[in-house]
Amino acid sequence: MRESYIAPDACDKWMKGQVDRKVPYQEKHVVQQVSIVGNMETFGLLPRGGAEDAMKEIAVKTAPAVVEFGAGRGYLTQMLADCYGIKNIFLVERRSYKLKADRSLRQNEGVKLERLRIDIEDLNLHGVKALSGSPYLAIGKHLCGPATDMTIMCCLHELHNRTEEKGHDKHQLRGLALATCCHHLCQWKHYANKAFLSRLGIVEEEFHAMTWFSSWAVDGDHSSHDSLDSEDTSSEVIRGTEKPDPEIVGVERIIRGIPGVERSALGFMCKDIIDTGRMLWLRSKGLDADLVSYVPSDVSPENHLLMAKCRS
Image (cartoon, rainbow, N blue to C red; front, side, top):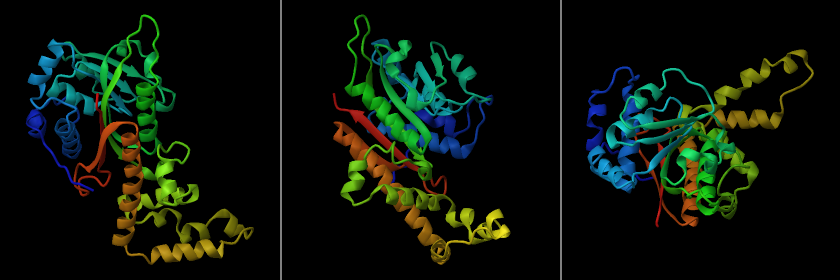
């Protein structure tokens, strides 16, 4: 996978720590956010001049809104607002958080902010009246497991199934930038590109195995969570009502015999395959799409960034 570690000039004040200290500041997260934003700029989703050029877009009413999926506290969007002058913001998050960026964002002149407390799976962007008529960018940092698939399905559904309701302008997806993570949580029923896996001879059962192996890219020893020790001390074994399956025990021993470096490599391969399928699905829908490693694995092993932009 192509490495693309980018720190745009527009984010200098964040990289140098010259930001509002009311916002929790952790360097490793800032490095990740800066590279996501830098890759968006390089890929053509953001103006190269940062906020100054963004203001020119705002002046002619072509600046996109930003919809952050799985927004959490909203700090990725905070960086876009600070460095690129984004004014129209929608944060999609089902959970409630303290120490959100919302207060700081609302203090930015001209910023319109709306939080959408909803599961991504249930979101219909056409129902968001404040987004009507606006081009938008979809972003997300660490979209866990199936949330990535739900997000691209949500955005592409909007792109290809626009309603022509009288009195409502259709809004338009300009592009997306999604940092994927937690591939071990991915689900077959939600995965966007089953056809890609089928062509590789990968069926549902093998997909589940791949998601399980993918966690080794992060911890290197997934077997520690389901080890023989934990099985042997289970209530069923202690009571003598159930014996460990010899086949499962054999698999556990094989896994323990695999060096940690090899387990990690296998985990990364599985993550690569899962995200490559997502990228190819976006291309099949007519978008320009790319998949890069946006930070070194020692900064975060969850370092895949999926980007796409509409050609028209």
